[in-house]
Every structure is written in structure tokens, then in C-alpha cells.
Length: 68
Image 1 (cartoon, helix red, strand yellow):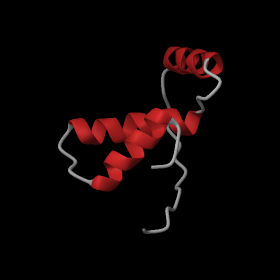
Image 2 (tube, one colour):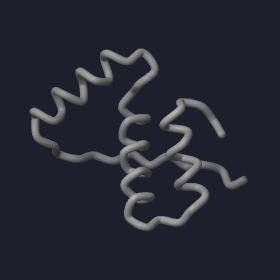
Image 3 (cartoon, one colour):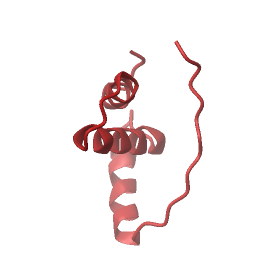
Image 4 (cartoon, one colour):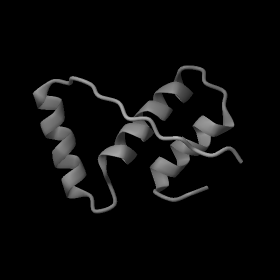
């Protein structure tokens, strides 16, 4: 298995979106920003034709909050 390397990103989003995302994260004990963004990006890729076991694994890990 390849070593996973995490890369930081920065993005400007509308304040309204940030406020709602923060409410969601704050209301779920097991949720954090990394898990939310990783899940959203990997789901986007899967829905738009990515055919990768690694992207699928990352999505499932972010969805269930555990290592697969």
C-alpha cells in the first residue's frame, strides 16, 4: 500500500455556506473539516467518472470515519 500524503488546500467560499457547514460540523461529534471536505471531493470525483479504488476507499473512509 502506498504511503498517503496529505496536501493542504485553501478556498474562498460564501460566508453563508461556511456558517452552515460549521453548524453541521459542530453538531456532529465525529465530524471535522478534513473528513467533510475529503468526503465531498471524493464523492464529486466518483459521481463524475473517477474509476479509482483509492478514491473509492477515501470516500468510504470519510463516510464511515474509519480506515479501510
